[in-house]
Image (cartoon, rainbow, N blue to C red; front, top):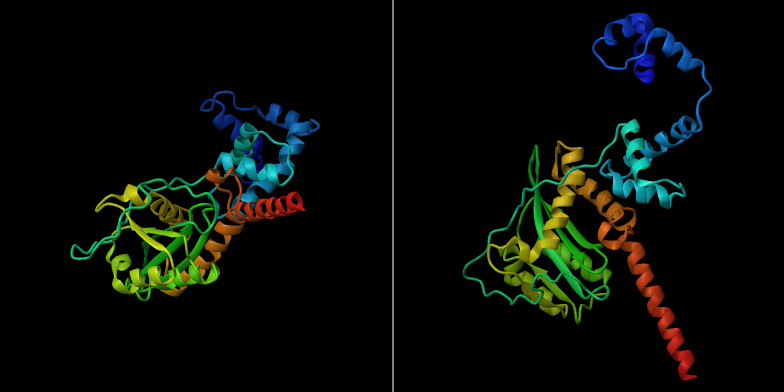
Length: 307
């Protein structure tokens, strides 16, 4: 109420505001109560709120404006603030920010009934003991003023890191998903021996040029059952988050190139800054760094035992 009066008193005056709203809003201040409240020394809570509310607003904006109470609480703790979850929710209300809700819309690619399908090696078990052991791939689309932009992602299941991506104005296998796969393969050093590559039955992924490339790199191809998005649920979930956190937040989109640049920035944020609930509120980069640090420590300990 104090803030509302402060924002409008120059236009309407304190007494008219209180006179008009007091009958309509239960417990609304009198003009005398307003002046008494303004003359009191701010409480410790009010001073802390004055400090934290701008910080909450800044951090929320820096993370695409999508974090809800749980992730904002984790982020504030990572920034060194001793703050509870309920307090975080209250500060978010004061800052006028809130989490974004995921859409239930799902986009699936068309399958080719004549193609020979690889077996399902994953069977909805989207877990891996380490990086570069299980990748999932999928395609989504973005409507722009100049036509559709199609987006392909390749994601490492262990760390949720997007290891390859591509944006194009066509769904052709050799242009859209293949370039995303090649990016991921280059990042992995060009050898995918022992890795399982899982996708849906879309004709893009079942095209010979794509499946041959998967095998050439040493990976084992895998697909789910026809017409069942749950068999590629992790990739579908990443597409959903991408549409929710970036596309619907920052649109409308004018060109494919604009989507491509925004996707580049989003992928960097996803891998390096975004807190993932499935990873214990850590980033994909932190999860992989911790894995390789533990692996190196185990190797050093093993050599020491042999010596």
